[in-house]
Length: 440
Image (cartoon, rainbow, N blue to C red; front, top):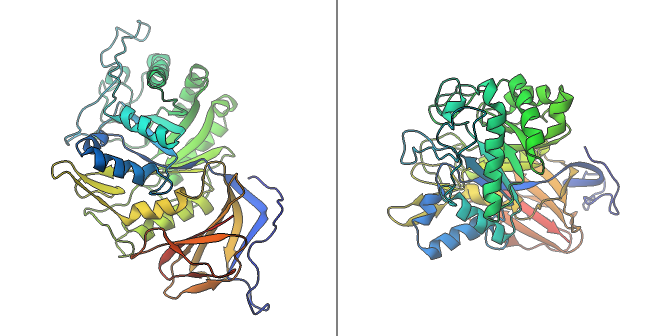
């Protein structure tokens, strides 16, 4: 936890009646985690859906993902290393070393097409928008490196292949470097506690800590990430195993977890940066709504992001996926046959945070007198302050504690980051809405 004192100690001030507590208080004396950013993944060949659209539509979608004026301004892009799901049009494992070179000590036989299922194209586009954080994560080692001989259906990495697998991962970053993309963060496992019918590989917490010690010295210049557990509570065991091993702790710079099996309910047991690195809600329909009680709507996403930031002290939040097809809970639905796309309120819920809370920001202590308000506050490196207020109640709330030049943006059923007037130091927080107040 970072703590410090800055010039303005308290942004929230009492309203007209000084005997009543202010609706919102923000204490800049107390600082929490530094923010790395917010982002999406487009692994499993989802970028090919985007490529099927017209150039105009492609630009519109890229704007919605990465542009800070028109869209979310995402600052993290997660890439999949050799992974795609089974039983779908994307059932194809792309590996930079598809064939066994003859053993773990044989000279590797790498292949590279410069495209990586269109991930290179989107990464280059993201970089042009200003994205600098590229997280490459492997769902599995090639099958010949594993005890089940298959990149799918779990299995574990054979001990004698550990170094070769580490070199395989680092070579992937080198190929991207040739394309002008610097992989900043490198993960060697995805959901190591879950056996899937698609690309997957098991690690116990202790095995993950052991492999981190193999990968770390080879991957110098790239931050090692671990371990993308299936649930946040389950991720705690992986963080604990790494923290218990001084050499593993030396190399693992970011601890990650997903929230399918369990939600964020507290911080991971580490003082390193942590990311909620993958999640979308359960469901079997395409849902564009803001607040329909389905558990797939925009309010659900806004609440999950708030909890991750305030309960979990996460530095990064990466959503699954930016766009997909059919009955998806991605941020967008892309129909490559009809050549159309649709945007859900999930995108705008996440955009309310990602557009304004920039990499390098610090979360500040914040609270509300009304328990219906979920409040978080941040100070960006440029000195601007952002207060996020999710009003879960059914009545509007007035906050008379705004300082400086301020703009409010409302996201609800009828609005998507719509500017709202701030009168003097007063802002109205609509019911069942997310209001983002930016003060400069």
